[in-house]
Structures are given as C-alpha cells and as structure tokens.
Image (tube, rainbow over the protein chains, first blue to last red):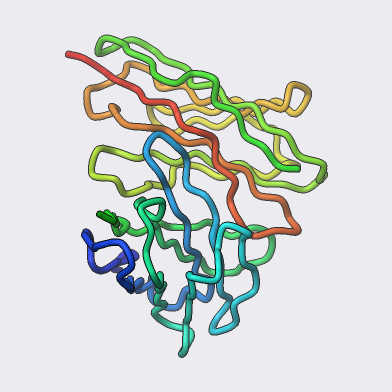
Length: 115
Length: 114
C-alpha cells in the first residue's frame, strides 16, 4: 500500500507566476486535505475534500488559491500570481472516513520558494 | 476556539535518557480528538497516535507512552531510553468532532545526541 505522494517536491518560481501542485492520496481514501507549513510553525489547514466535494476552506485560502479534486482521486492546488509570502511547505493528507474522527496520513510535501 | 500549546521549543538529551514532550489544548467541544505526529528532517509528518476525548487511558507502544489528562487539558508524550533516531520535531494536534481539520501546536524539536 503506497502512501500519499506529492509532486513536485520542490518548486522555485518568480513572483507573479502561477504554480500548481499535485497530490495523490492513499488508494480508496475518500478525504483529502491541504495544509501549509512555514518555518518553525505547525501546519495550518487550508481546505479539504470529501470525494470530489470541497467541504471547507480556511480564511487563509485567498482568491489566488484554488483547489480541485475532479474525480475524487488526486487533487491539485493552484496558486495564481505568487507572492513571496506564499513561500512555504504545502502538505497534503488523506484519510478514510470510518465513523468519528478519521486519521490523516501526510505526504512528503511540496516546498515552494517564491523569489 | 481550538488551540494547542507546546511550550517547549527545543529539548536536548543524551541517548538513553527519558524525555517528556508537553501538550496543552483548549476546546469548547466535549467530543474531540488528540494526535501526535513526528516530523523527521526529511519533512514528512508521521502519525504516532490518536486519542478521543472519552478515552483517558494512558497508552504505551514500545518506548513511547502517552498521558492524557482531561482535568488539566494535557496530552503529554514520553520517550523512554531515547535514541538518536528519535531526533525530530514532534507536533501535537487537536480536532473537534464538528470540524475535520487538525489544529497543530508549534512543535517541539527533540535533539538526541549519542
């Protein structure tokens, strides 16, 4: 059973460019989450999907951020017109709903550097 | 509002010492879940344990043990006979039944030297 995978692992971009990250969850996991982690901090929730439906979005997710999970499998997170403040590690997690709180398993993350 | 506090920013121990990582949480819900994750230098968060608010039994898994006390809103993590491979950042996290997101503390960096 493979874990959560994320691509690319590293992304360096210039301010103002658009970037897109991909997350492949654990097979058959119906929930998928995106978090952002800056240096010295814990991860902060951005958004989550149950199957293809986006159920919750954080206020951290500005209009420049958009996430999709079109077929309820992999997900993409796009950042438009990147800013230096977007530099962070973007983490994806997945879980299988099973009554009560499910356990989230994380991928290796995509480290974004905006120059 | 949900909040997790890990007051210890960094702890340094020598191999074979026991070490306890503190976690204090705040929540208004009566049903909630607590987690510990390990983040080694590679960066990937590794799940260690999940407890629900109705289960205050302490748990032991090998060299790891967890002490959950609702009276003090704490969920502390002890590593017995620490090893160099335990060096990592450890995060405590909270989730309420009504929300699926995890709220993390700022983490405790553990350095175990030989």
